[in-house]
Image 1: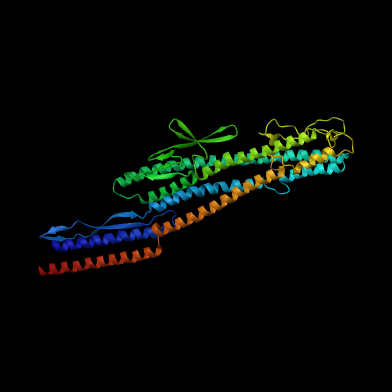
Image 2: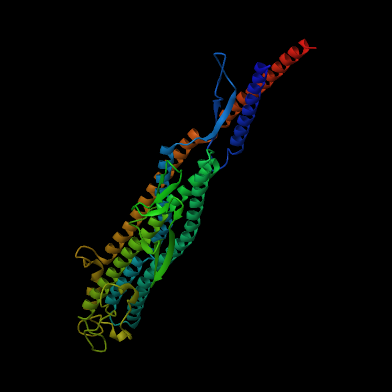
Length: 460
């Protein structure tokens, strides 16, 4: 009877194992559309054999564990590409907005500069005309307003980037806490010999989201299964169950982002971060200030040259050596403060002598539009056009990099799905295989039961 009982136990283990394997397969099928889900695989193992009268007798089958398909190399590549994708996506919108602000259309700053010098050309045709003189002054005011508006729009874009950064800080702190909670949970569960499968899937998603935002790199402990995250500069963000905290503070018009490490605050900027944070900070702290500096340089150079030539002339009121624009003290801030210094049309110095028919100074001022006065190599419009071209080129380069990151990430995700994702065809094959295994085990148990009945009938 001991042999028959052993056979029944073998059949029982086979049926229970087949049932569990069917459950795992069904769970895979139900999660075929779940983002980040990794296919689960039952790992079969036999019970230790018994030595009975010199023979090794098997004791059936069991599922040692339910494993999780995972490819560390692909996961690392996805993490790295997410960082590049986050940077490109973050820069795309502000760079596109910069292209709109710094353009070369008729209504742009370049158009205003052309109109301003065009008004001097028209004045040279009729230097005594009050209307032409009023147009010159109005064009100067309009040019000053165009410079100020350009700088205001650039500063407004910086403020919008600050709002975006502040929002991401709150979201990232929540993700940090969830990752550390999952670290603790995974370590606790796996210390008992079980697998924290769904928790690992969720943590992988969060790690990729943080990488997209900060460009972090992850390192998993082989002993505990916990992950630690580090910025590209090596600054730790998460270490096992301890997470740093992101914070913000204002210094004037600038929003400073820092990482709190105990009592120490580490300032974050475009050089020590990556991902969308790095992209936003590069545009906010490098690209926009660089453009504002160039616009200020243009405004300062234009005001200085126009004033220099205008002071050669004499107004209809007989006064000479007047500046046309309020002269900026330095290039910094010149665009925001550029304004016409004259208050009356008679003060416009169209000629050197001050007579109504003298147009010599107006001709010299109109000729400034073609003079290579910026760094001795560019006209005012050429300098601005070069700036606009650089902005457009940076935007297009970012679009190309973004497109490349999207394509690479799509290929990697497809590769991941092929290796560790759920394949319905494969699961259907497993479903049939485990079903047949269960049916065969049930038939085996039925056969053993018949044998037991036969044995029992011998004693009746």
